[in-house]
Amino acid sequence: DVAGEKEDYQVSVDIIDVNDNTPQLQPPFSASVGENTPAETLITTIKAVDRDVSKEYKRVEYRIDWTNDADIREKFHLDEITGELKTLKELDREEKPRYRIPIVATDGVHETTPVSYWISVSDINDEPPTFDLEKGIYSMLLPETTDIGKNTGIKLVVKDPDMVNEFSYQIISGNDEEKFRIDSNTGDIWVDKKLEYDQPVNDRNFTMRVRVGDGLYYADTNVEIAVKNMNDQPPEFSMPTYQFSATENTDCNIVVGKVTAKDSDLPGDAEQNILYSLSEEGNKNFTIDENTGEISIKG
Image 1 (cartoon, rainbow, N blue to C red):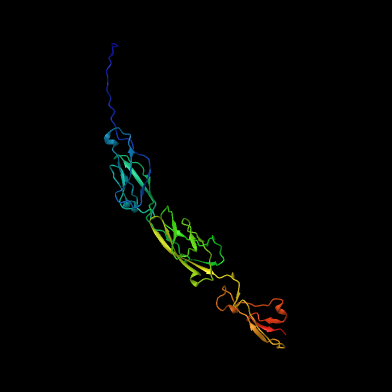
Image 2 (cartoon, one colour):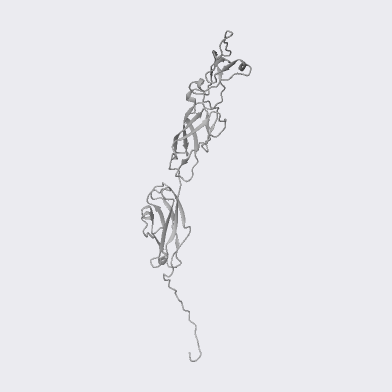
């Protein structure tokens, strides 16, 4: 006052909170859910923080910024109070492996800009394998001289929409004599026993049923292997010894006999494919028709 006297007073000031902070969405901004899980499966819980002190102003609600994405609307639901994000239907990774869901948090006055949450659909084994038959059936022509242990060169192509696959291969029929074996991991088919074209006809062509499995599902296909004839057998005379006779002074070029031979390599009439000749000693007095095997006196 004017007299210069003063007195201290204690003043209490209350700071009244106002809603002046925008909620902040918190990481993680990604989650995953297994494909084919039932509707109402909880994927993740969205969280946001509001720095306002008042409980009234700290209350946050959530919503999906739908834009024009009907696919998101049909498959996901976000609880506006709890922030729980759930599925509305089963998801199929093969249809769509990943979804971007824009989410907004609001305290009634302020709201965040949309934040993208990425939801990945994890794979399960729900698709069967299939053989790729775009080029027709699997077939191969192998020479009968093919070495044991040689790869036939048949490439089995298998498709499976599932992301992770471990295939197993086996021959389930058509390999009774075990002429072939298959690598259970790669599907490569190998020659396991000697091939013989000159055996019965049913040993010249093989139709094997091959199966591939992925641990739950399987698929079958036919593999055809034909054996190609090769000249790997010598011709054989019908008799070990031939005896012919001729009187002296027999005219030249008279046929005194005929030899015949067979060759198991050759189809049909072997005599039409075998050529005959005489040794140097026999060639002095006789000739032989290289096609028929007829022996004549040399002129």
